Image (cartoon, rainbow, N blue to C red; front, side, top):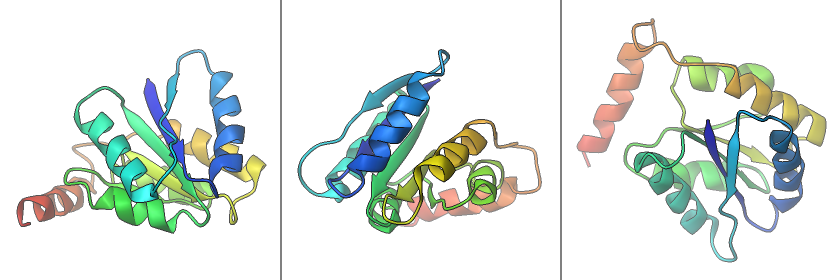
Length: 145
C-alpha cells in the first residue's frame, strides 16, 4: 500500500513519529509531502496524489487536525476524517471510506497516534455494506458543486 503523509510546522513532530512507525511496516511505501506554506496547499496536493492513483491513502497533520481535514475535504472526490481515537479511525474507513485521516499534534499523543493509524490501516470499506448508500450520497455532493 502506498501512503502519502504531510504536515505543517505544528504537525511536524507527530508526523515524524508516525513516519518512523510506518517505516517499520515492510508492506507500506510512504511519501512525505510536507512543505513550507499553507496546509490547504498540502491537503490539496495529497488529495490530488490519491485521485491520480499514485497513492492509496493519506495521513495529514496540523496543530489540531481540523484545518487539514477541512482543506482536504474541499478537494472534490476526497473524504477526509479527523481522528482522535481508534474507534473514529476504524469508522473513518469502514463507514465513510475516508481516503485521508487527519490528526492534531497538539491534541493526540504519539502512542495514541500510532494506534489510530494502525486501526485505520487495518480497516476497509465494504462497498456492499450498510454504509455504502451514505458514501454514495456524500460523493454526489461533489458533482453538485
